[in-house]
Image (tube, rainbow, N blue to C red; front, side):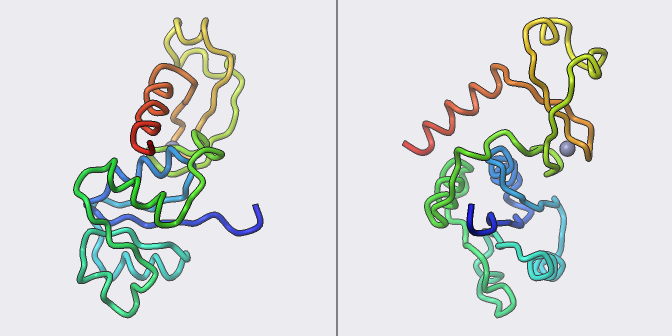
Length: 155
Ligand SMILES: [Zn+2]
């Protein structure tokens, strides 16, 4: 990729959208309670696009790099962001921790044997771990479900 991938910061109303953008591999800051001033300051400091449902916030001079999210439903919100920035929603999917925003790293399954269900251990070979929070990810029915939902949203 020639240009830097977009980075976002989501306001407190947009937790579900933030998780979905992380599922797609995007770097999204999200805190469930953050003041407008702190949110804007972080956006400027870290070159993040502000995603917000607050029109007043987007009208502030310091918050120019923002997108006003229109719909209360997360699937419409996701579609709006993907469409507006024409972002690639396929190549980075499942590379980021949806809970804490960390970048996932592959991990040998022997190392995490005691932390996953025996059935998963015996049926899956590839695992990723979040170096920040320790959460473990693997390809399973939940990911298949997410891909199905994404297909629905983007069709
Ligand atoms: Zn994590």
